[in-house]
Amino acid sequence: MAEAASGGSDAVAVDIEVAEVASGGSDAVAVDMGVVEDRVSQQSLISSPTTFEDDKEEIVASRREDLNGDWISSIKGKILREPEIIKSSSASESCSIHRLPSWLRRKNSDAYDPKVISIGPLHYEKRKGELRAMEEHKWKYLHAIVSRKHEDEGWLEDCLAAVKGLEERARNCYSEVIPLDSDSFVEMMVLDGCFILELFRRIWVRSLICSAASPGNQKAK
Image (tube, rainbow, N blue to C red; front, side, top):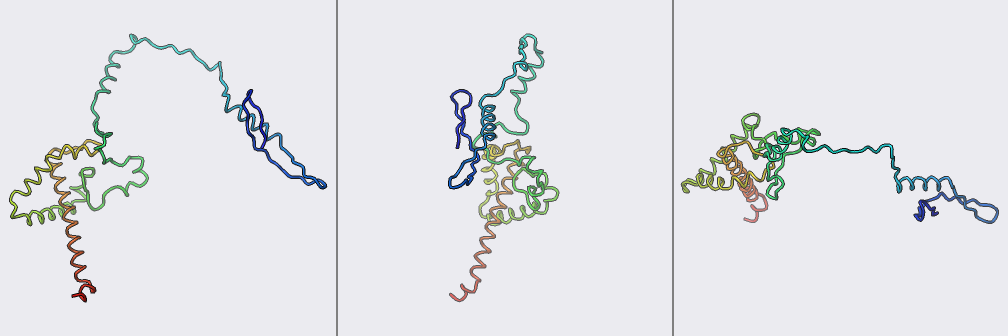
């Protein structure tokens, strides 16, 4: 290790190449001074950037009176304009659902598009097209729930009313404006939510049946 002085009192620590040369019975150290000079020169360039006086131009600010009034009004209007795609609440803690950025989707768009079922509003338009079959399954599952609630008259209405009261809170969970009217949004929430609950219930019931029919349980009986 060698230290070289650069720019007054600043010291530059420079690694040097050391070679041991056997000469008779003693060891000699060969130092490549060219490496030292190059390192010191590079450090000087980093610590003391060069300024070019010839590149400096005088900056003359325009007067506000010379600016176009319509242009200024247009900018002020854009500042106050409500976003059309993202919501003002997109930066709040309540916002937790974001659409995947387009630059990431371009890597493999098929990996992020629903192929079987759509839950939520972000792919709502596909419900009437390629995902229509699963939409019919959702309605069958909702029918199954309502059928079990036949003694609880008005259960569906109570469910819709409860979700209606949570509509604004649910919309604020999304980073963008959801282009659905109030009734369509609430209907989607109830349909999708009941489908998930009924799906989990059926999986749970099936697991109980399989567990009861297993050979181990049969022997225990």
